[in-house]
Length: 540
Image 1 (tube, rainbow, N blue to C red):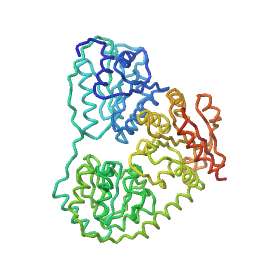
Image 2 (cartoon, rainbow, N blue to C red):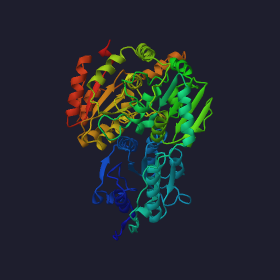
Image 3 (cartoon, one colour):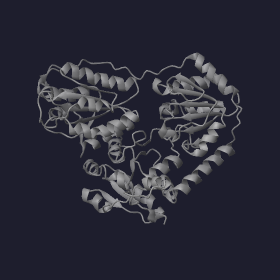
Image 4 (cartoon, rainbow, N blue to C red):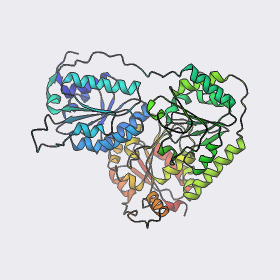
């Protein structure tokens, strides 16, 4: 630990010592010192084709592993290119660390390469914090702070900027072995558990809403055949359950009182209003969850979240409880006891609601459900899916019941086009022995299309399901609903199959719905990515 190296090299060695195995990025003359120590430290570097791709790859890696995703970018434009994925990571609570070079001085000197007025401030707009390290000791301390924050608090992106002269200067590896604190579950107050248990016992139509923050409560304890904490709670409460899009898979698809992920449907508002108690766990109930101003419930509402910020909202009748989701679910289950629950919900009511909502999705997006069903039938149960902002994904998020939580990743809050391909690459790098799949639209693919070269270079067996309808279909539909004559929604697309082959990828276009399954199975077995082009011709 006594060897002097340039600080850039020391940063790579420190990250490796802290458990970082993969870095995504692009080298440049300003940040090249970060690359001096990568191979020596034993870190795998994934070369992106654009800094936006590097940031999304780090995001996809972090979502797949639960560990921080790290990206190296250059001063100025490199940082700005990476801010879109950092904004996505912030809105979706993803731990991403961006390490960037920066100019040594910008106040008195003008005309420098990559100069911008306030690089640190720009990154601060989309990160948890953005700081500049003026000494090696500050760089080490900030890295440890970032990793510790991600492990113990709400995971969000951080930005570390290091002046070029500091990266180039010799530095000692003054980072002592550090015992990182693991996640610190926030225990619910016993009085609040007692209160909630009494409310559930008195309710005739209790309703749970599970968000992505309750994901860990859907992990079964060690032991054959053991129910998950969520399953145990539902069995004792007799409650119906919604999930948000991010919470899909938390409630088993065969739970008789599952209402699905149809929270944003207008009909859901009335159904929620019929509940006499709503308990929302691990969800902000944000605009991207509801797509309306009100939940639809004016009675008793209990909100459970590990983060105090969403609990500060002013929803009618809200009782906020700050707690780790798993600890809350387990404690509430114990408090409810073993008695047979009384419920005003019926299996027929839940099944009828799900069927009507599926029909509504089908009516709004004619033909798409057949495509989705064909894709779902061929998808491995342990596949991790990364989707983009496209109509195929929008419909699938509503009707596709996941077998397990945390296996479908979408740019929910920030809503960034082009997310899925590079994020899927990051996920595939993170899970070399697990199937990973991308669902993306024709327009979104062109935002980050060059990253296909990265996937080819890595030899990733990555199916890229491309929905190609030759237009911005969702925007066209929105304009029509707003009585705006659609314009600027039709684009000239390239020959995606030829383009994929030019990159060295495989490419196929199923002629019928029945052809989708063999194409997908072959793509998972390939030694390179495969673009699977699907068009409206499948159901025309």
